[in-house]
Image 1 (cartoon, chains in turn brown, green):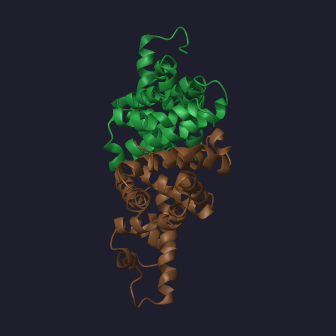
Image 2 (tube, chains in turn orange, blue; image 1 turned 30 degrees about the vertical axis):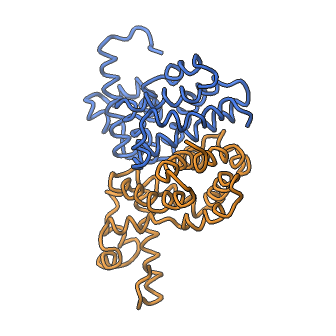
Image 3 (spheres, one colour; image 1 turned 180 degrees about the vertical axis):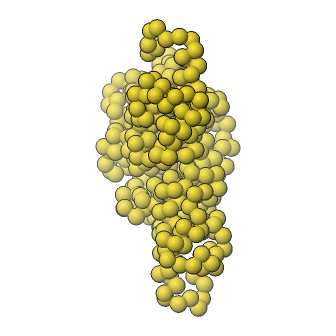
Length: 193
Length: 193
């Protein structure tokens, strides 16, 4: 998606703007974080943000873009034993979330989305276009319903473990999660509903 | 929990303060909503808030208290056929969430909790003391782990259906949710893990 003809320095500037935007959206909320305040902290002209991202919603959409491609995270699931796809999916997604960059992104996305309806809509669209579509590719039939059910379980695991930090959920190891929640995902992906 | 000797007018004032607090915490975030601004909008002296709730955290804790007692919502689950406890639990909780007052409370709690670490801790404690304890009462063994797993699924259903509003999750009827997610909860409550 990288436009051609961009100089190397452009990527650094773009990344710096996105880092500041993520921080301000999560901390101050979508409405309060202004293009001007983001430009100020990133030490660029506000017009450059418009040049790169088109609008505030465009900047938000880029800022919330997932740091890893769910299709790549879930690639191993498609190659796993048919009876163990559920376990493989839990293991792959928990593995991603346990890395600080992915976990921080999830928490920032959640804080931003909670602050404003527009931000919630962008989070919804991002998860739909990435996670839900990637999960739907793993199933043979009823893709919408199956991927929706997988989302209810996996979003809830992330929400209770990384955001709420319910002690009893935090206490479970990734392997225990794969063993306990894997069969749920297996049923949602494969079994008759 | 009502202290004795309180006059009827006190209850109205107390309820008015809590309504304003819920609104300001959800809209402005825990940190920005001040005792002074809440008192101003509720048309009371700030000292009265301290008198009723002790502190800002005390006010927050009361404001986030669940509008229905999970033990009451889940009472029917304990009386259902042992093979259908999972379905009964999904039906009872979705039934509660589909009422505007409970759904609005969940969304307000989430927005507040996303705004500040203290608010997140209060949400965690509230859900632990109420929902997790009520679910743990339904099971015979491994109560911590079973209730934790139930929380991951049910919190995720509420999160994706009422907050994110993923279209494919919103599209499912309460009966479809009971039929699809019920067996998951049944396994978490009863089956060997």
